[in-house]
Length: 516
Image (cartoon, rainbow, N blue to C red; front, side, top):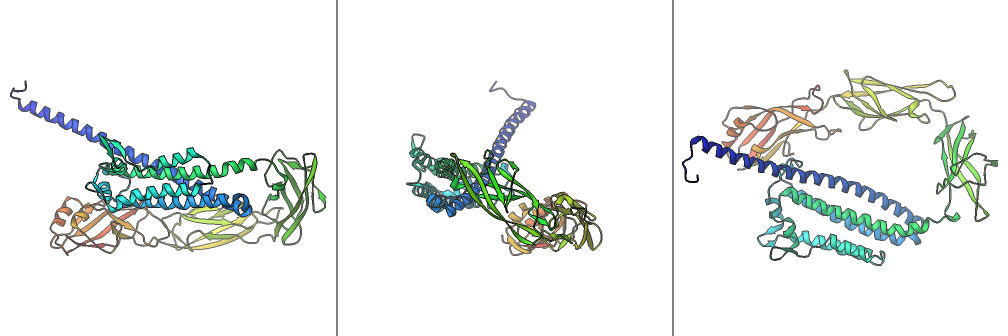
């Protein structure tokens, strides 16, 4: 069979079979690259959540340290030191990822990140490390040692020390017949997307380390503080409304600082009046508000029983009385004008009146939630908002108006690789670039899509292109451009994504000087 002469038809069948196998292999490779990208995105979101959570814990710990420095002061210093080292190292790794992807226009096109060159060129120079590669290892070692130094004497947990050493271990690893440097085993010869994901995983280790340190610092102290002590309680006023009008009744409740729902006060007195109604550990207040505008005092005692004895906690609080409103407060969240073609955020409120009792109307205005509205201006040069506020007690409603000038979206400017005006680049780069559009210094972050443009290469006829990338004819013309010549891109049409009905002004053109 091997020596038999194949017919033309059999040769074609064999060739198609080989092409089919190659296509299957390519598709599998692309799927793997996309999977790495998805994993990287999920880990990035997890890191963002962890960092936000760490910020909340740090703020809480800082407050505790100010209130009780003898108990929380040292722990707060350790937490801040670990946080500063973590932020510094985390940001350094962000910078490394930025260097690796600096030449990639679409950062989410993971199937195009199949090359090994970016990572290898950044970290390796033959068998040796580049300056960047050595810094990468040094920064990992420095972070590990800094964290161990920060927690020394504050966290008595040898297992956790071993965990830190394992998470940020840059020692040589087994490979082949012997050992090889950690950075080579982890990064050399890998596709760019896997290298990026690997660095994001390292950032997750930073976030996990920070979270673990905080948990260990807080755990033992919080366990001790969980024991109820009368000395740790304080009274808190929770009014039904933050302010009341003259003549209204003031409603709210006073609770102990721990919000202990199982606690029932034996006696509460406020301004000489005995409070009889209690709910979930709080004394419910329902009394006429003072006629005096401004701050008014609530004084008395909160009494409860502990270990068979009465414990008295003084009440010394205030509430505010204001005049009834006669106008609404209307403000544009981003500007003193509104723009046609976009949803303009508007805040509409009225002092002392709940959002449910406010009705606002205008052409193109809709309520989002609470005091937040969105306004999409219609025709004309001005829009007038009418606000009606319903006041309690049968008082006549308050009606007020606010007017805003309507302006059109300004003319966008063309971009190539994010640059505007006159730029320099090789013609090979221009051939692969996407023509974009931007609105510099505009209050809204609008996504614009180029629908067509014209390109003029010196010595060639103007070519009309549909879409945002150079077509074959434009690329052929561009090939003739000489170094130092200027290629002009003009007559650019664009539209707002998700709003094809709004007609944007013509996009300002861009001039590209060919460098080679």
